[in-house]
Image (tube, rainbow over all chains, first blue to last red; front, side, top):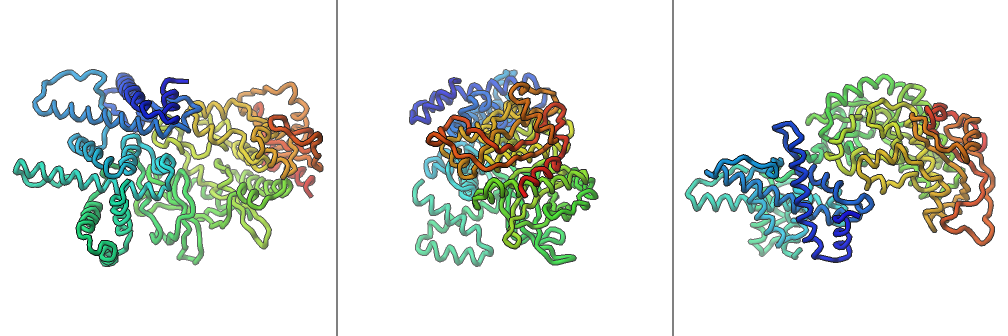
Amino acid sequence: MSEVTRILDSIAQGDRKAAEELLPIVYEELRRLAAQKLSREKPGQTLQATALVHEAWLRLVDESFRYSSSRQFFLVAAEAMRRILVENARRKQSLKHGGHLQRVDAAHVEIVCPLPDDQLLMVDEALDRLATANPRAAEVVKLRFFAGLTEAQVAEHQGVSVATVQRTWVFARTWLFTEIQRDQNSAAGVSGNPPKSRI
Amino acid sequence: MNDEQDRLMDLFNEARAKGSDAERSAYLDAECSGDAALRRQVEALLEAHTRLGDFLKPPGDEALPSEGPGTVIGSYKLLEPIGEGGFGVVFMAEQLQPIHRKVAVKVIKPGMDTKQVIARFEAERQALALLEHPNIAKILDAGATESGRPYMVMELVHGVPITQFCDANDLTTEERLKLFLTVCEAVQHAHQKGIIHRDLKPSNILVTLHDCKPVPKVIDFGTAKALQQPLTEKTLFTAYGKLIGTPTYMSPEQAELSGLDVDTRADIYALGVLLYELLTGTTPFEAERLRSAAFDDMMRIIRQEEPPKPSTRVSTLGKRGIEVARRRQLDVVMLRRMLRGGSGLDRDEGAGERPRAALRDGQLAAAGHLAPPRTPSGGGWSAGADVPDAEVRVAAPDGGGAGRERDAGAGGGIDRLADRLS
């Protein structure tokens, strides 16, 4: 049994601390996979975040456990991917704002994120607020956006109908959208610029 | 989730579903009376929703088809969704011209190359037009919707999947075999016209009642080929979980990724799996196991593993299996050997020789020897033991060696099986 499978098993048995153990492992695996792929691919290739998550799943979890433990795994993997994307965005932003120009090492790989960096960082913050107000909606966003699960898969994980997932998903996206818009407007207000409307 | 959030989400979704601004406004008036703050929140969300666009949509995510009830495609008006598969959504629809009737329209999801799908369909259209069989649903038309998605129009069949029908009506083994035979005849008809289904499975074989008589109908002939696309590793990632629709019914040669074209034997194999399922209530390889296996493992299982004998399979189902066996008076010794196609692999030289000879003897794709069931002696059957001696022999299609037995075709053993049943 792989280590990850063992931890997933403990989580399933109700060991909450086990999830904390799992995060760094999945996080490292995602980065390692990304670096490995990038060194093999032709220059200019980019990596899909959700494809990486699925590959990590296939590599880390024993076949016989894949079905029963996928919920815990994808929640943790979504969180790990979220951190990687946020770190990448932060790093790029600091480089852009007059940071020193350095050769980017292999661990800092380019993973495609469908959002511009500044928006990703705002989504990251707003998602924490959503997790407090509406944990289930936040979970849908994590599983859909960072782990790339389909609506049907999320429905299976949460034990609800696909229609419920669709309703929650639209609501969560709209909710985050309004939050980000408010952030942008208030940022623009402070610096005296006209409000941007570019989302 | 707290109640306030719950309520906000409900109001947002309900209001969003209203057909007009007036209706929406009236709805919110009624629901939010006295709570101006709540109403402002809902309205802010509704306003934001109109500008949402693709915000947060995962890359490569398939948007739900914008075609929905009420949409008119060509001369067809979509009525209601009646099914959803890996490739698209099937709607009941009204054909408006040249004749007025109800049809089924399959709208393909985005991501398929519309031009290629339609080109492949056109290439087969002539052949499809020759399919004239009471147990095959007709393919009527194909084209592209305004949003560029391919669609196909089929005869509308009101029915339930054959396995479901058999179980819901508690059909006996004999009745099941009779239905199965009709399906074989339909498939044989298509094969003689040079058309392979490629995706035979219970949900593509619907049973309807005509004058109280069950009539199976094979649907989706010709669509699988048009939709065929090479399986690559990429497919695994973009469509994980539904990558090839139904590996349970996939023949070994289809599980080879070498891109060799499949022939009629693929359908025969699928029919064999169907027969297995009709008789034992379960498929040779557990769908769950295939689903949870990694892509390569799954392909390996289909290509190399020997499926368990139906009797073994039934006995491993524990109580349920015994129940199935008893109720259907199923005394299956063998329904065997969906051997690996192509490679010439045959690891059943010993014990299997006799049954195989019997099989060859009949040149059977499906052969049955029916006899009255034997009552088990000695206080019933214990789970784990093989179902005792049997006089029913049902042979599944065989792809052994160069597939010589499956070469016999869907109709090969029909006459003989039919004789036994009549």
